Length: 271
Image (cartoon, rainbow, N blue to C red; front, top):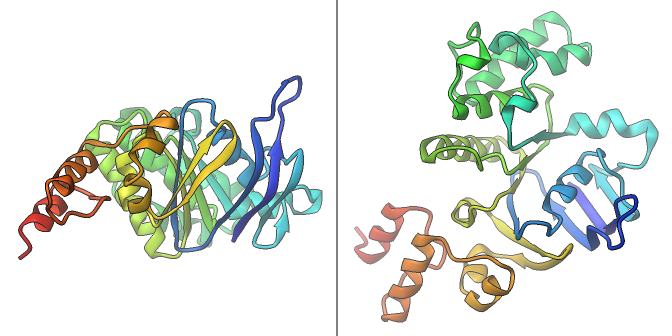
């Protein structure tokens, strides 16, 4: 469990805090989507998850370990992987398998176990067979999956995706979202920070930030039904959810959180 208890954070020299009194939990096997307008504190929260930042007030714990405990920094960061928006900022190897091996190799993982970790991580993100490919020859979606494999090879319980689909085309985004579902099924906790509200349709829960505070924490369908609140947060319904809302207003039975066009069709014409 990643747990925030009454966490506030203020950057050095800032007049106002970036986060205010945040209480939040992420459990293993759960996907939580975090949304909010630019400057709402999403990336700050991401970096608090694995101790890159430590709270100004309150506590963040990972499996019971405090991120401010200097003796547990290594353990915390090995339990929480972080995947950033631009994969080029995380790729360090000259070929794919070297990049995935970089993290665990620096942890001192034995050679035999290292091979297993690399192969397993590449299989999860569907990059098996590209072990000797140079990263600059990969597509943007493949690079992002490589960054995920690098985080996964560290053996984390949780992975934080900070706008990791923002630079991808629709097929690339779909690939990364599919990886998240596989990781959730394998028991990993996923915090997905995104400005694509339609990504939330695949989540177990959605959390919305507003000016550094939690404005909503609950079910995706409930959130999508609150059009006025979305507007107040500087957000708008994704096209499929907007279509579902229009159809509901016309008297049809359609769920608020529709994952894809097929789901919308099946809701209208159940088999």
